Amino acid sequence: MPHATVTGTGWMGTAPQRLAMLLGSSETFRSVVGVSTEEQALQHIYFFEASDRAGEEDPKPRAVIAVTDFMVRNQSAGGWWGEGGLALVLEFIPPPQYADNPSDSYIWFINTVGAIVKEMSERAGTNIVNGGSGTYLNMREWIVLEGPAPCVPDEEDGELFYSVIAVVNWVG
Image (tube, rainbow, N blue to C red):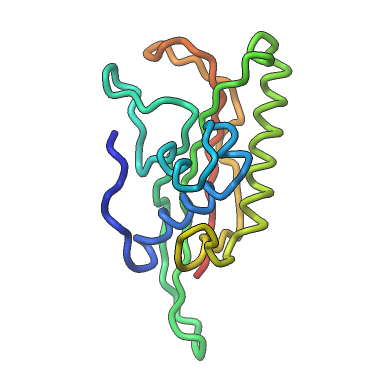
């Protein structure tokens, strides 16, 4: 699936891209996807869906971001304020040293997701530092909806991967 070439505008349009930049700023996420820069990490982050169709696969490890809800609220003297939720799906293949032991690969995955959440929470709402402008998404909650769990879908190559689906709530 092609990556976005359109720049989001307004609260709803910029929120997914700001979450992608926030995720890409995580050293742990960059390590999992095998890149060194935030810009390179964005090539492993998809909007709305990632493809598993034969010949069109978006390789794992990867992340997928989609808008789940959005609201504009009048804060009285503070003016209008946007807020909402973004679905974030993380799909990672365990490293070879953990792949044969389900307990080890599961603990590796939850440790990895926990490190990513910690790194994102430390940067949420701060200024983008590596060549960008504006701020990272002002994440206020990370809520797991499904997983973390192992996955081996029949329609895919049969390679074990782990997945977690979360909602990232934001304001700003």
